[in-house]
Length: 466
Image (cartoon, rainbow, N blue to C red; front, side, top):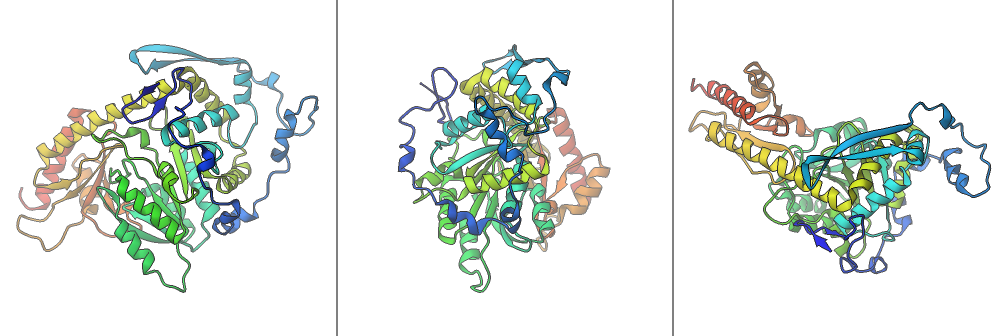
């Protein structure tokens, strides 16, 4: 039995079973009952009905049944006969491994199928959650695959949040989630964060001082590893405190985690909320979102949600109405690759990806120290692909105001040949801030140094030093 440096246990055959000592039997885990979630589901989620056709798809699998049910196109008219592609070997990236997708597996990818995803891919990801987060079947959760984690997150938000509801969001917050809450006219309650993640005292203060006449928020949204935009990774003590508050004040944690496998900190990776809730009196207050965009391909749009069955059922009903299913062809391609690799090679690949981004982080931070020392402040990110830094734009000795990065970054820096994002786009109320988000994922060392050199010139001009 091999153990990787981040504590994930790998079976000798590489295909997917954790050591029997990894966690107590699932029967020892107390689950929240399904009826508990009734009050958490939105009006839309309660109104949606199963498709009269797709809901009967499983009945086609009964031996001897002749199905006249669905308007599925005849496979004989699909022109595709096989897909052959090459992938890098995780253990030796100079070598390539051939992968073939054909026959029955390709047929499944080309046809209408299960809303929750290709059954074998769902099973593979379920095994991955056991390996990565020690979550087993029979603990009141299940998993669905969709068109990227953003797709699943959007459907989860509409399944839980009603128009006008208050929602808790870490601040600064991922800009891509703001339109979800804004279009629902939600009251976005900002929870303060720092380099260790959500400040639990800020969250506690908000909830303990909540008006008695007003319903408390049902959800808290967070990106706990390599947060976009701040790059922060939440510490284990902070996560445990947030979980305790979720239990005491009865809210659901939306754990949006596309950078989980991009952790490159020196310390052991903190457990996810999904794993840590196993230590709570009962499980069922975490709805988790994973993505393959950062580790396999962004364009394939493969993500999956894991959590309480009532929420996943609501997500699937939304999918059945909106787009019937995620792309089964890209799911079939993904499955062919993952089954070829096995879990051990997949984890090795994620270590390679994390090491790549660590090197990118180191280059960017060195350039920050070289060009913006005394002109900016930042914390070192331990995961992901972003640096969140504060510009010191006032002349030396002038502390009358913090400054505002909006015009300097959006206009003057761009005119000077640098494109980044002013921090205001990550604040629900759009207030002024001196912070800036920069991505280090694509730029070469030469480009990074030139960009920050140009930004230095812009800042010095703003301060009147040039």
